[in-house]
Image 1 (tube, each protein chain N blue to C red):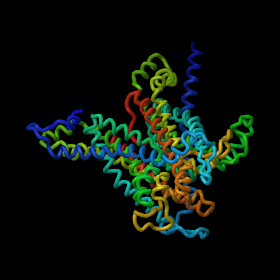
Image 2 (tube, each protein chain N blue to C red; image 1 turned 120 degrees about the vertical axis):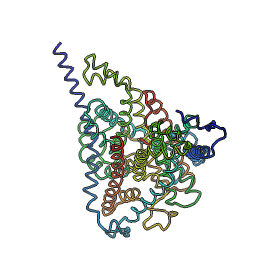
Image 3 (tube, rainbow over the protein chains, first blue to last red; image 1 turned 90 degrees about the vertical axis):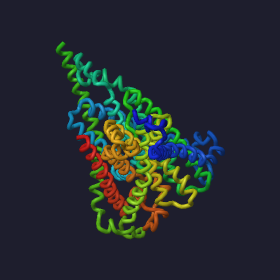
Image 4 (spheres, each protein chain N blue to C red; image 1 turned 45 degrees about the vertical axis):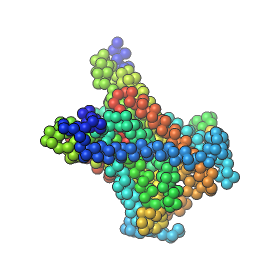
Length: 321
Length: 279
């Protein structure tokens, strides 16, 4: 890139830095620094805010099962459980569907199908979280309570996951809403990854007489595998940190239950619900530590995911996916 | 041999069918959500909804004028903070981004874009609200600006990189200083695409509620200045939906209809812009 030389050495023929160029590069550089500052300040502020509980409870914070702000007992395990299980459930539903969407849109669909359906899948990402929550609470949860959960209990009731009363609001509702919200993330990153697969691989497979689906499974998917795993991890990162929609449907009860029908609670939800009404400094710090944990986990997932996606070829487009 | 091909063709059809089915399945929730929002929300829309303030609990009627204005105010302030910062940072990455610093900024932007929005809310609470001892539209706008920043930065960078270098060389050949060539030629050429990236970021920020919970908080009436707790549509939808009153639920649906209309219009216009630019 020719412009990169502008950063250091003077560019004018007769020596001396042009002030305008110098000021311009420093000014824009200052705003670029702002991005770095934002993420570093975030790490520092979150760590500082959670110091009181870090020093008071240490590792027992993460394994304690009792959350009782009135008696200053803070165990985060039920929230960790709710977050992890609801996110995994979301992946279980969203991964096959979104990979199907990505394969269909990038390998099988005609041009106009790709335009129209691709546009609609992107619209799925544009609907605000709180609107999914509203829909989940007033449309999905009643349907789960009256139809899906009784049906599951009747036919698969021998499994521990489908036992207990049908309540609508609970882990299952949370997982379903999360899966809808991460689906566009996974499918759009997967489409980018599939687009980076060299066309010669496809042509080679087709020339050898493969059908379209054989081409996908034998030539395209193996090449794209690490990128697709990256796409799934980006989806997981979104699911772990998703707040409003899941707060409105998961039932918000801190408990560890094997049943998917039972209410649960996530880390993000407890922050949303209790932060403004926190009783005392320790409670605030406990919620901040929960936020710190979420921050660290999602940052690590994100880095790993982007490394995996970059291995397939073209780096994915930046921004909130 | 023929039979074997028949089997392979059958498998191919099944796989194609399954992928198409997955796509249809993925779109079902979109249809269902939009249908529910329109059907349940349209009954709650009235002139009073757009002009009135909430009535005391138990009294029917009332509106969300303060939340609509509040949302626009917070998002407007967020644009004021976030768009110039994001575009200038993006220019730096595109023009001077080959350095180690550039790679680090890019990495930070990518990481920042994966941070959950509730954590950004907590951060701004600790940074601003706890220090100033008050919730305000400014704090809410700062949280939204931080969420917008990485998207705008990276999309600005990428669109600037798409502009042919020959344009810059032509300008430089005419004796234009490099910084002016960047602003007047490169940036101007990339502007429609950058506008799309910005609009998508704004649409996303408009629908965010988690980062506003502890920054802008909420307000049952008008906020006189941006330095006071300010109501917003997403937070009001949450508050009303989780309340026990059916009358409030109706209002939540109406607010959701307004919010979805705003957000979808912004994202659709942004995407149409892209298509026109590409075609």
